[in-house]
Length: 245
Image (tube, rainbow, N blue to C red; front, top):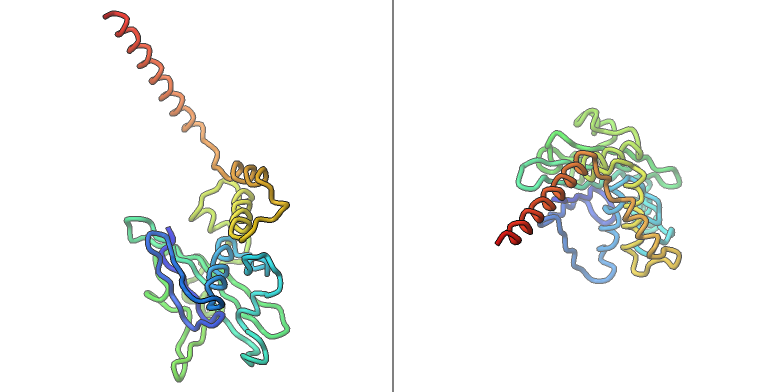
């Protein structure tokens, strides 16, 4: 289940960690305080690594890009470059076993953004066992570059978004087909919007949910069939016993 989330050098945050309680998180704050930005930057972005503008707005608008959350308005922030990180930490219930998935981003004004992904499976925890940044003078933080992160966690830095999405599905969700996992993400995006799209009919939701259900294996079917047969036999024996009274 979700255990912790982290934001490094992103939006108005320097370093922020959010602790979940039994997989749940409640954010409180006035309008415009950043609740929606925080959650939409983590989910669904960190579930599949896709960072298109419509992912960052609950209403589906494409007005603001991920780069905007890193750099801010040029006249206000005066930033030309910024590197940041987002991550989600999962914990196996009842055990001290952790998996962390995340992404690093380097945005430069008027240039394409560089993005890299990572999945920690060695039980190391960000902010506890190591940091995603170095400390500079006056308490300022300097986030790790992609190369510096690779030096710390090795081959747990992934090649790209598709590999990241595949790994998250394998380690956390376990759908047999990545396309079905992708359909689930699309459904989550639609359901989080205040008003469902007119084109997104209930029948479409039904089809996506049906396809998202994991297929039953032959061993599972045999087990169910054997159980049903035993129930029938027990019912027949009960009827016979009643008839012999």
